Image (tube, rainbow over the protein chains, first blue to last red):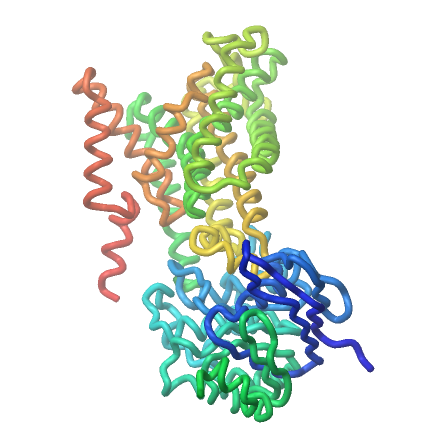
Length: 249
Length: 316
């Protein structure tokens, strides 16, 4: 058996008395697309924060391609190849869309400390414009991020993490805030791009239609624990999931 | 924000400004040429402050590097009899840069008011050291800068030579500043102001970006101090005093942070306004300056530089 791309081993994280993530184990294989579902406060975002080192687990370990990354800061985890996007877009709001993308490209090519050559280098510009065109952001290129519609901001936040060419991409509700009309077209662009690059993808999502259409495997959270894990149809069919996550019966 | 056109208009604008400033001594009296040289030299420190301001960091202690640059020149001239500007100015830059590297390691952990206050505290320690260590610094009397030579030549019209030295150094610092502002590090500093979390999640480091900018900022400020030491011919602890630091922040806000040219525009206007304010109302000149800054902030929040760009931006 080959090593998994990402292994979460008996990880717990408590905030005072609350066990936000409670003894969670999860193994994700190379190239898999996993959707994480669960109600608000069930520990989904905390898990992403633990994997990327924004939070330290109270116990347990996290392995990336077999090596221990528990406790590494986000910067190290990111450079190893685990990128993430955010539920609330984390962007440089005073700068324009193109500059946001160019900064990501520069950071990815290790030019973060370069104070001599221009950020707007021709090869970087070509790459940036290609990304903007592919994700339908070209019209917004020179708009300040703070003036963007919420949906476009969401897409840009995802684009910044895709630019990093990660092995694993963690997305926190990639389509929340994107209009119902646009969300499928965003996912239709995003998911094949990730598949084509063999990016292992884990995304948190409230929209079951998105989960059914784009995830291969679903993991259901309730009160900090995983209550179901397997093929999407199977997980969504389980009575406990229907009750705890979908709020039925 | 198109790269190519900004680059061209920058070069043209810079060359026109340089040519105008180079011709001015033909028409102006000595004292105003001196005033211009002083303003340009201090403009380098203001640029140092602006580099950090773009990252949302206010350094209320940049007079520290200004003073270190100036004392380096004075010390070399006074203690070692070296008045050669080609030795002293680069040395002032290196020493200020090294000091900024050491203090920057501490400062990059802080943001906002804590960064500002710690900068202030460090500069006041330097001020006290300069006053107390009489044998080394001349105490409150300071040191006089004896002798000035450029490339081994001791000029007859030293005022004019110093002016052109300042002008050439200003051009060089402007060029370095412009490259910095357009570079990934320059943009990363702006990113620091808006979102440090995203910087870390791009695999870059906000602290490293701040430290690198702080070192460059300190080194540039040291150059400004070195030039002022040559121009004035005397250094004193006042150079490191908090009022001096406050002036640099004042001028940075006055000029604006939108362009590498803004600090020099701010600095020249500041020196001129201050000079005339002192001349016409010797007892209330601070009030005049204060009202002037208030008016600029009220009507032109982007600083004086905004006056130049606003007109150009409109037709688009």
